[in-house]
Image (cartoon, rainbow, N blue to C red; front, side, top):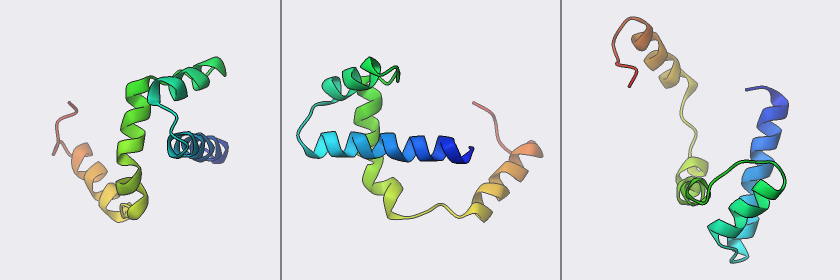
Length: 80
């Protein structure tokens, strides 16, 4: 992911957090994003909110990711 994409992702995720913390529902959040040309469903919003705590509490080590990619390239994992 490029730097600008990371900045947009973080910014949009922060907007979802802010709206959720203000009591705005997933349907309304989704609608607001769609009004601004960002196609995200209410289920996507709910998933991001649900995963927020887990994904922000700890980073997955790059080494672990590289190992899985390497094993996958050697035929160790199915793609589905």
